Image (cartoon, rainbow, N blue to C red):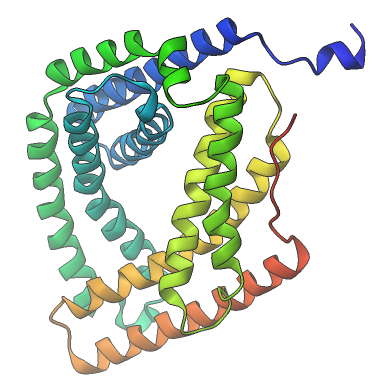
Length: 290
């Protein structure tokens, strides 16, 4: 096979069938991990379910304009609520790891923060158990199946796209635009909200590439690696913000509170320096392989 032939895009019918297959596969993975999380209550399984719910939401948003009107809004709302219900435990677990690694050895056994976070963790597990039981997977599964069946050439034409390939290209451009706009002021220390928005935009673009890589059979490894690097450091900065919220909601001795506040401030400062270096060394630019 020549290099030129290897670069040919799949035909429209193949792209359409792969799109439907990837969309449904994301849903099946979410259901599989939901069953596993209910069975084990293991934090890793719950975290994997949270990631799977986000990936499915990315696929849902990508194909949302192409599916028939109906209960798709209900599906979007239910999966979003599931994702949110799982986030609290992840934040508490990450906070426990972070703070425990920074507690002075001579006061570790008397640390009020560790006790308070452990109590909060127990409450989060109970909340998650309830959320998993009330997630109407059978009803939502029927919605997903109807949505998959409704993705066809006519729905693509209704979106004024000549093909799914053209539609994907348009989506990619639209997802990159907020990233381009947010990058300029993202290193200003006070611009926390901008960095938070940038993290979300980069995450969405990364999920988009993960989806279309499977559909179009293209190797997006370099851009995915770069986006993951950006998402990772911005994610850690968001963790610090979440830890601050947790810290302010706990009843801690003033000296202990001040110590951990200073610890978070120092960590945030170091992360911003690392993020600034990343921007300088590996600038994030637009790409969509053709």
